[in-house]
Amino acid sequence: MKLLVLNGPNMNLLGMREPDIYGNLTLEEMNRELANYVQSLNEQIEDVETKIELYFYQSNHEGMLIDVIHKAHEKFDGIVYNPAAHTHYSLAIRDAIASVPTPVVEVHLSNIKSRESFRAASVMAIVCIAQFMGKGVDSYKEGIVALAKYVKAQRIAEQKRKEEALKKEQEAAAAAKAAEEAKLAAEAKAAEEARLAAEAQAAAEAKAAEEAKLAAEAKAAAEAKAAEEARLAAEAKAAEEARLAAQAVTTDSQVEADNAPSAAQASVVEVPSSSVIETKVEAVDPNAPIEAVDVSIADATNAAETTPDGEKKKSRWSLFKKS
Ligand code: DQA
Image (cartoon, rainbow, N blue to C red; front, side, top):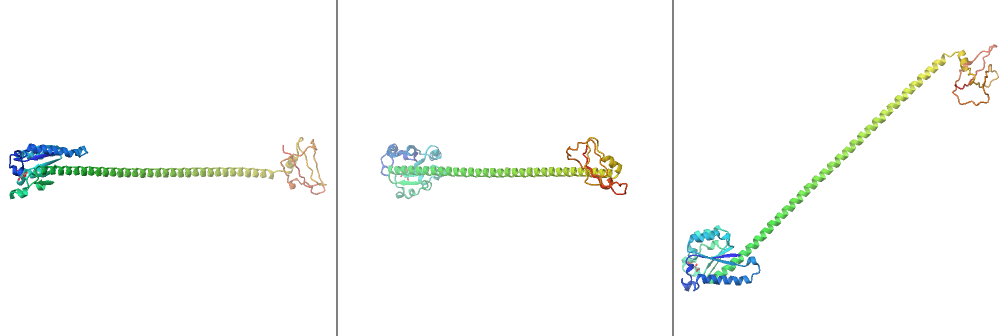
């Protein structure tokens, strides 16, 4: 760390100036002793950042001192300051110290509290972090040690503050990330659920459509079948009616004609009766099997004939092999 040893008016005259109060050391000799002291301190300090570098400045001019104080924070970590006579009255310097972040330790060679009453009061004390007096050059040494400890403590506190801020930042980032991930997961879940619901709805609709199609097809098939059956029934009925109508006008002679088998095919199966009136057997193989035939049954009444003696002939049943 870099510390500035700053001395106010008349301090350039040390050694010559009231030696019974301020000692025999010149300012230059005092500064050299302080430099040696700091060197011995640094030998005990391992941390390079904590090793002390001393710088020195003295001015008899209030404005010059104020300017140095104003800019000190640009280069130094703190000031060990003997304001000399300004201690007791310079509100301008007091305000300068209060205006900057640079920590300042107030030091005096003599004990200002045990001298003239006008020296007892320090307008600087209130804006400085500590005050050492009455020990000659050792007041400066104590001031250097106190300031070095203060600066180190400030650095540690600043480092801790930065770490906590970084930790909070990281925690906030992690929380934001977790929230974002949760949001994305919820969105993905909702999308998946919507997709599944849409799929289910589409499947239900397809199933309903397929069922409707099958039902329509079944209905159409049933209607077609019913229509076909109705058509066939109508045809059968018409055919039957036609056949019955044709049969109704059939005369006996027609029956006879109908009953006359062709020479090649007809055979007459005799109805078991002792009073068969007429049998026609033509060139037919009597041994030939009678095949399954459509049977045309002549109506017995129509086929009946009357014998000469007035008896009704027995009905004759003829089976014809339909050509
Ligand atoms: C002094 C004390 C002041 O009162 C006096 O004006 C100084 C020196 C000291 O170091 O003891 O100049 O600051």
